[in-house]
Image (cartoon, rainbow, N blue to C red):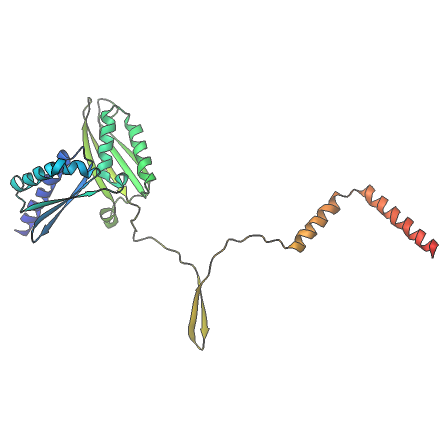
Length: 262
């Protein structure tokens, strides 16, 4: 019985998600969450444009609430609308943006690369876009575009990677768009953090003070004396041999005059 209820509940949530996806496509639907509370069922709707979800005077919200209660059997449904802060990091929203660009006749490669630039520019660690269907001709094909780092398998791929799917109907046929995003705040289990070294001051076998040492890049520091030496070396290199001979002759002449005066 428990397994049957689990499957039934999952199927109901999938149907609700498909219904909201169809009704709120123009509002930038970004997913939903269903929370069971003592007062009823709370449905949290994420959207890029919350105003279009609410409607004028709350008309759309009342209509959706009535549908969820009558058609889907939710107990006292209450809808809460939340705005998506960064739409570029929401895979559902980006999948529908790809759909809109493909419907306008843009080439699938151009659409994929421009979308990847937007997602990575928003700070994502990695992104994968898969477009499948009749994209090149009469035969179906799959085009996959990947940038950055994204987990493919294991528990981190379930916890951290967010997924979105959408379909678009074109003249050649139906295309499927699958978007996977690795958000910027995901900390993987194999992440290594290098801490700065510490220096402990010990007195009487007790740690008195701990200081964090700052690692400074090595730079060549030239003292004023060293600068003077370098200038002298440069001056000596610039003096010609003939000049040295003239200087030596002048010094000898001055010495002979001094000896004569004495």
